[in-house]
Length: 375
Image (cartoon, rainbow, N blue to C red; front, side, top):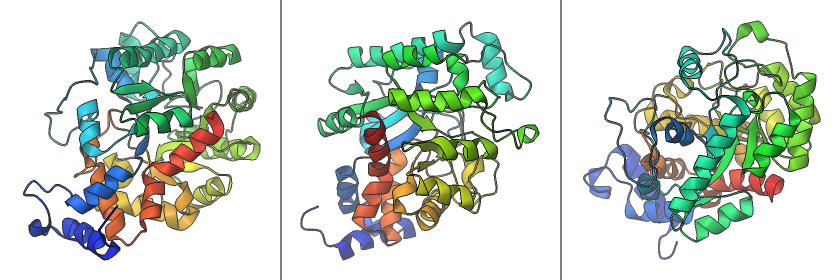
């Protein structure tokens, strides 16, 4: 930034959060000085599920959409016009893939999806990756399907929205290591071990019956294969025993793409302080989701509480964004879609965090891991 003092920047951000309408436009937009800094940041979200809607509904990310339901539930949270408005430069696009067999523990909406869609497993994984590639072919001046951290940075610097592909659960590779290589060849660069039902690799943290069951032998092989292929390992949804096993064998940095802090909001999808510390010690980065049940009551301020807790417990280097937008969620008030990200920058500045720390949280931490692993 040029010509704006830190005092003026913090005053503008504090005025925004205090509701001083003299400091910003009548539509509650972020003050110009704070917004200018936000647009200097490389903003990356570690988990957005837009490809699900691309596959199910032919959702066009190139045009503006609007979720017309109260509280903006479920989806319709991201498109390229709104990403530009919110200063969101890049995201990991999550691939929600149907298992070959929908088990009892799978949450009902995903069971219905698995029952009604014809595709599952590796075929659906490759199909969804091809949808992201097709978006680049259709929107070459606006969208980039990135395969490395260097490609993400280059796309951002060129003014194109960039997406990295991440598989949400090993059901998408059907228990076969050769399918990991097939997906990698199609552009997959992040892989979660489990979603909401047990996979050949791991067990979900949301099912008490799986407590104490760690990574399977295949899960350990899968982690090693991901690291060999330079695919980022994602521990989101993995139960505590599986996290312990993974932390004992990972050699490269990793992510928990979308979660929050259990000390701030007691929810089974959130991480304990001990987990946060151990993940940070191993170079892990944790993305905070905007889902109301994870975050708790309090809107943007409560979301900021989770980011600050990560920064306090694990250090600034472990905190990131991982909204879970378009993932059938109900966002916290004030964060209804991707246009909300300037409020996060404003809030962190208002709480006294340095510009460098804010840049790390808004995207540089995530970019560091992706670059270290993928190139």
